[in-house]
Structure formats: C-alpha cells, structure tokens
Image 1 (tube, rainbow over the protein chains, first blue to last red):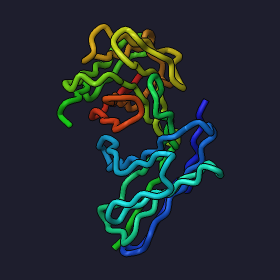
Image 2: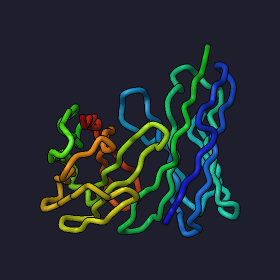
Image 3: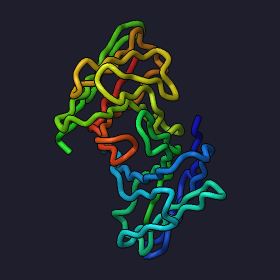
Image 4: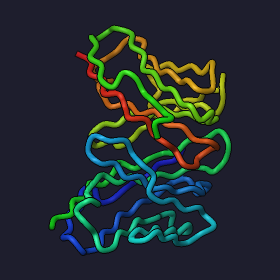
Length: 113
Length: 112
C-alpha cells in the first residue's frame, strides 16, 4: 500500500521568509496530492491540491510542485505570516473509486514576527 | 462545514467498554472516512466507505468496527476499548473518491 514520508517534522521561520515542506510517496500509481492545514484544536482543512498531470499549481502565497519521476511533492509558502503557523499535512492517493488518502505525519510550522 | 458533524466531542471511557463514535453528513457524499490522530503519527486511516453497505479497512483497523446502513451516517465502534485507542478521531466525507475531503470537528477519546 501507499506510504507517505513528510519532512521536516518542525519548521521555524521569521515572518516574511519562505517555508518549504517536502513529501515522498511510494505508490507510483498515486495521482492525487492534497495539502491540509490544521490550526491548534481545529479540524484539518484543504488548502491546495495537485493532480499528476500538472507539475505545479499556485494559489496566492501557496504553491505545490510535483515530481512524478522522483515520487515527491512539495509545499511552498512565500511571505509567511504569523497566521500561517499550524500543522501541515501532505497526502497521496488514487483518484479513483474505492480508495482513500494516506497522510504524512505532519509538519509543525511556526512563524515568528 | 457544518454539514459534517461528529458526536460526542469529548468522551472518557474505561478499558474494556464498548464505545461508539458518531459521524453524520448532510451532503449525501458517497465517501466517508475515519482517521485517528496521534502525536508523531499524523492522521492514520482506520476504515472508509465508498457507499452505503460498502466498507474497507485502512491502515489501522484492528479493534474497530464500522457500519454504513445509511449514506449520511458512518459510526465507528470500539468493541473493547484499550488505552492505546486514546486519540482524536476525525471523520471526513468526500463527494467522489479522493477529492476535497471535508473533516468533522473531531472526537477526543480518552480510555482510562
């Protein structure tokens, strides 16, 4: 089955800096890669996702890149703000009926002002 | 997001007792999922369901039972709770396959 590794487990940056979180997956058939943000005490919420037919996707200060050959994908946050502080989870799965996402262990991002 | 609700929000139970966590969604989403969240382990898939009366095991199904007699409900039962099942449990739903999961608010379960 799918296995997702996520690094780093913790990341501290200064406000305005960029943050990068990386994930690798094991199942070469996986073709859907979402990222979730979880604030303290709250539920995970989808912030961006990418499918295997796309190499990069951007949404304002957030971007995700995918390298299918190397089986890794990354989340890039530019111009970080204190409200970006949260736990970020990557996930991988098959975009087809009858399957479910497998998540990485999470990255705790701290943005200090 | 009020369309998916979990109950109870908090639960304390004793070792060996049976406990059921409820999950209800109002969107008529086909897919529903149960994950547990533990420090250092992230979100681990327990069970999922592609439709009423169809369920499949995830990464950590041992000690759990699910059912899905109605599309909108997906209860998770711990048949004989153990301390290792102390965790935060999240239910999620999705309209189709692995797309746009929406999570419930979670149930914090403590087994003493």
